[in-house]
Amino acid sequence: MTRTPETPTARRWGVGGLVALVLGALAVTVAVGLIRGAATPVEPVPVEPAATAAPAASGLYIHVSGAVAKPGLYVLEPDARVMDAIAAAGGLTGDGDSAAVNLARPLGDGEQLHVPEIGESPSPPTSAGEGGGPVDLNTADVTTLETLPGIGPALGARIVAWREQNGRFGSVEDLLAVAGIGEKVLAGLRDLVVV
Image 1 (cartoon, rainbow, N blue to C red):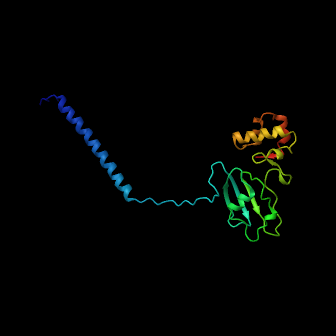
Image 2: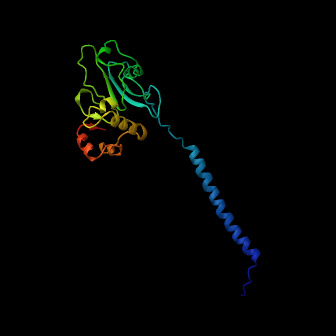
Image 3: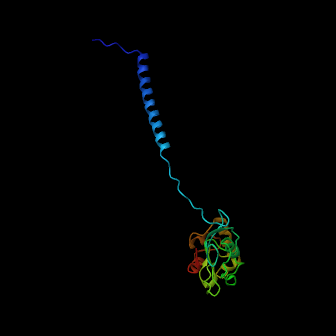
């Protein structure tokens, strides 16, 4: 039996038929997947928004607790004060002691503000440097920084300026990036400051 040689046209029809068959199978597979996907409902995931006073990407996160109408976590403007945090939390309750907190005090990011009830002994202050505790480099103002050994008005201003330009201090060692602070000054501050 002699075999007749295939002509180029016959070979093209064979390859073309094979390609058409593969594309057809692929189209059927995609169609079945789409039909199955449309038939399977996706359960929505409920998301509860966080209570915020004003959504701000660069705002202060303040935890307000105690004798306020709606205790919780609030995001406030960068220049917010205690009175703003209390207002965001719905104001004082009837037994809230406004005289026990300094309503004009500026707030620092990550601070917890507790408003005591009338007659309740006030909780220790949590802002930078108050109450004789360590100074928080991320919330302290120049005046508070000046209470540290070796830190005068100029160096305190440079620390605040570095924080404003670069964001929060990640560690106490980040002070070395501030012009005028070397290993010797850092050694004197290490146990007196926190981040």
